[in-house]
Amino acid sequence: MNFFERQAEARRTSVRLVVLFALAVAGIIAAVDLAVAVVWGTNPGALLLGGIVTAAIIGIGSLYRIASLRGGGEPVALQMGGVPVPEDTRDFGLRRLRNVVEEIAIASGVPVPKIYVLEHEAAINAFAAGYSPSDAVVAVTRGALERLNRDELQGVVAHEFSHILNGDMRLNIRLIGVLFGILMLGIIGRKILQHGRVGGRGRGAGAIVIAALIATVVGYVGLFFGRMIKAGVSRSRETLADASAVQFTRQTQGLAGALKKIGGVNEGSRLADRGNAEEVSHMLFGDGVGFAGWFATHPPLLKRIQALEPQFRSEQLERLRAQWYASPPDGLDEDLRMGLRGHAAGALPDSSAQVSVTPPMVVAQVAHPNSDDYRRADAIAAGVPEALRGLASRRDTVVPLLLGLLLANEGKVQDKQVAEIRARLDVSLAQYALEIHQQLTADLHPMLRLPLAAMAFPVLRMRPRPELDTFMDTVFALVHADNQVSLFEYCLGRLLQVQVRESLDPGRYTRFGRRRLNDVRSELATLLCVVAQSGHDGADAARHAYLAGMQRVLPSDHLPYQPRREGVLALDAVWEPLDALDPLAKQALVEGLVATIGHDGRVSIAEAELLRTVCGALHCPLPPMLERT
Image 1 (cartoon, rainbow, N blue to C red):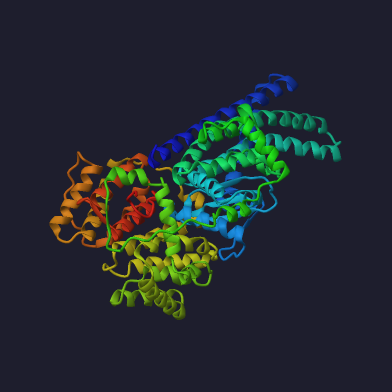
Image 2 (cartoon, rainbow, N blue to C red):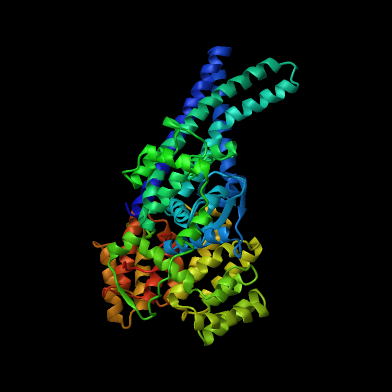
């Protein structure tokens, strides 16, 4: 499956989750009514009241838990005891983790997520949480940092990124909320019984205790359904994540090595915080609780290893267990002995280079990074000047850095943009943004603009909300300075707006789209027309490029080429309808974009970055370059 098919599958899984939730609620209500009938008789009023109260408790519990997670991945990481990894950390293990996460984010074409370490967990485990890449966090245990070498850590992180790219994260967060509601009845029953042991002897106390006992017993019914739902939803997604991680890194030893260490070290993957671990067990890299059989959220460990190394046998795992019992593995020491401090960075292509692409080739690469992308990400990360990387990692410089990326070159447009920054922020910041822009123009390869923005994004999200609102207003003003703003500058500004907006309220803006191509004919024509007229010299060339794209998207329609007089500003009206497309409809849209941009079969570096930006704004992350070596 490609990205769009996996997104469609995730949407179908969401529907299945709703059905399973409804069946679980019906089962719990039936159990409550049965208990009421046994204790108080078959009184229709009592049965109806019991059903209504049960449904209300489950619904309120689910809504409350989902609302508590509206902040995205960060609340989950904090609940699990996560500690954020500083952007400028000098600790070798933390620096290694940050480098791996940054490289995989760059290779995936998504913003660098926030990184957390579960300092008090000695087991080897990890998870990704959030509603979208804009609010994602990746968390690893202290045991994973200490026990895994760089290749193994890379395999684990790649596994978690596959959850980010496949649409699993939002499904997992909603699953937490749904299951909390199912378990609410048992929680209330246990609390009442605890309180009753302390005091409750008044009139009606016996009835209350009986009701609490019923709620507690029925709570086990909810627990049964909850664990079954988690197992049913999670196992197939974990298998897909393993396969995606291997396809990404093109080496099985890292992921297989991490799984072997889980099976061989004493701590395994089970977390010490059992209560929180059960709630997030479906999100973890390895089994964090110890469920088996019907309740297992992950395939058996040996089966996962054998999927990567078919010749591996259980006796070999026993030998490793004995070896590591005597001398536990040290991942950092293995790095030093095997020279795994990092990979050799390749050279970036010349800014005038061109690549040959086809629409199906690009569709296959969307959110589907390969080993070539990972090696290229090394080169990109190494190519960002240290001074600019430092600006991206500091809270006081990240805003002028991003604004500097949006500034036009010398002229009236730049003067107007600088005036907008002065009016909304302050004079010194405007001057600093201008100085950074000059530094970017002199020192930054065109391929590095989006990766630099991706590195800066986690720090930007740390700014207070009022400052982010002002920043968004400023970005909007810069990209609308006048019609001379380039399509890339406009799209980069739009991409920043999308990411900041989603990070402020992640639960509101991330949805699986359902619209069809025929519902957005006008918006499709506008996007392809603006891309064609912005990227081609002459009306005839632009018309041919537009028609090539429309033939891919709506082959049976005949929408004529009509240049938009407002230029890139015409795109303001298209983003929301196009982002609401069904995943498979987005696949056709991306194919049309590629056909328009590269109708001659060749795509320049600037055009490739433009395509990545448009895809990012439509939540279809594209790796940094389009060719495979």
